[in-house]
Length: 292
Ligand SMILES: [Zn+2]
Picture 1 (cartoon, protein in one colour):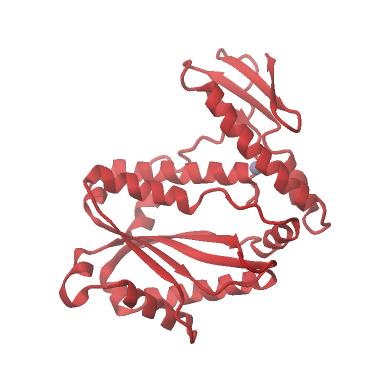
Picture 2 (picture 1 turned 45 degrees about the horizontal axis):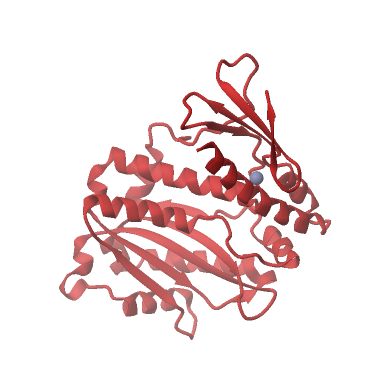
C-alpha cells in the first residue's frame, strides 16, 4: 500500500512539476507556478494501521496543479459515496450522463466562450422538457487542448442528471437528437454542436459505481500534456471561474452532507503524535525516504 501510494504521489508530483515549470516562464503566471512547485514537496505517511497510511503534506490548491486536481477529484467521489450512503434510493433512480460541447475556440477566447456556454446551459434548464424531467444535476467544466490546431481549446460540460422515469417513456422520450437540438437552440448557434448522452443502468450497485466513477472521470486531473504557452493561457482564462455546479435535489443533498469536508485536509503532523511516520522529500525526480 505504501509503495502504491508513493507511486501515485510521484506520478502526480511529476506532472505538477512539469506544469509549474511552464507557468514559471511567464511573469503573469509566475506566482501560481511557484506555488505549484512547492506542492507536496515533503510528504509524511503516518500509520494508524499498516495497510492504510494517512498522507500528510502541504497542498497548493491551485486549479492547474495536477496533484490538487487529483485530490479534488477524489474528494468529489468521496462526497458522492456519502450522498448514496445517506440516500440509498438514489441508486434505484434514473441517471443520465450528458456531454455538451461547442466548437473549439481560440485559447484567448476561452473565458468568454465558457461564460456563453454557462448562459446557454441556464437557458436550457428553463425549458419545459428539462424542468419536467430533470430533478437534479451536477455540471463539470472540462477544457482540453485543441487537437488539430495549436492555441485552441476544447471546452465542454459533463453533466450527471438525475431524471424522472417519464423521460424514457412515450412522447416524452428525449433522444440524443432532441438533446442536440435543445443545446443548439440554447447556444443560439447555426451549427449542430456535438452532444453525447448515455443512460446509466444496471443493478443499484452498478448505478452507484457508475455515477461515482463518472463524477471522478469528469473532474480528473489533466491527462493530455499541452505546451507551455497553452498552460499559461488557460491558467489566466480560468481564474476564479466556478468549474462545478450542482442544482436541484442534488444540490440540496450535497449541502446536507453530514461532514461537508469529508476529505480530510491533512496538514503536517503535530509534534508528539504517537503514530509511526515515514517522511519523504521530493528531489526533482523522485521522493526520497528519510526516517523520522
Ligand atoms: Zn497542488
